[in-house]
Amino acid sequence: MRSTEGRRDVLDDLAALGPFFAVETHRPGTGPTPPWRPLRELTAAAGPLRTRIEAVRAALAERASRPAAEIEPRVAASVTHLGLVARLIAPSVAAAASGRGLGMGLGELWWQDILGGPMPLSVPLSSAVADDPPPVVRLLEEVIAPLTAAASNLVTVSPRVLWGNVASAANKAAALVAARHPELSRPAWTAAAAVFATPWLSRERQPPGPDFRRSSCCLIYKVAANRPRSVCSDCVLRHG
Image 1 (spheres, rainbow, N blue to C red):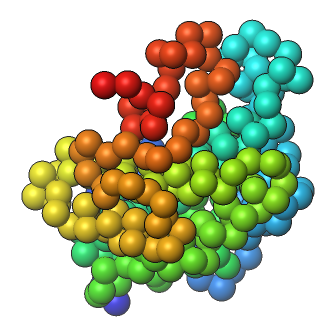
Image 2: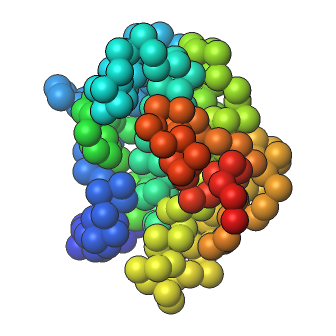
């Protein structure tokens, strides 16, 4: 384990990449105090996850100037899921690219239920730096997989859509790291490739990279005014 100064360097490096990469820290073994909450609660197909999906649904309706009842629950669930997994994967991929690690086990993470930007995320301080590259796959196994299953069980939305969100999040995280730090391009894409190599992403037809196109759609276009032009840059529905 490196020094406190070394841990601070990692956190500063992550914050410099943007709000989706920045994390707070807490002492391991301590319980969260408000407004912090245990991230584990989002893996239950009820309670906080249901509440957040409904809040996102309301926000999407307001943005589209439509009644919330017109926003499909599966769209709100997918958008909610994409925001959560992108927030979790980004710092893990970035830390892996620099050969350093974050403690990202399910019981180790805290979050704050805030909309309108990347959710606040806290990792245990003693795990903020490790000698070996972080286990990105462990994040999928312990955190992303149960979160994805909970979203799929709560709302009728295809697991293929949700795991496409994971692929998209990992690819975009690696792309941003590579763009900001070209010297980290290879390890960033290697970290993303580790995510793609898991059984959950076996249906993705393309490997991670600048030209990646996911094999599903996050469904956000369904709440846009100009649907044909509102698909994401890596969407399977995008032409050209």
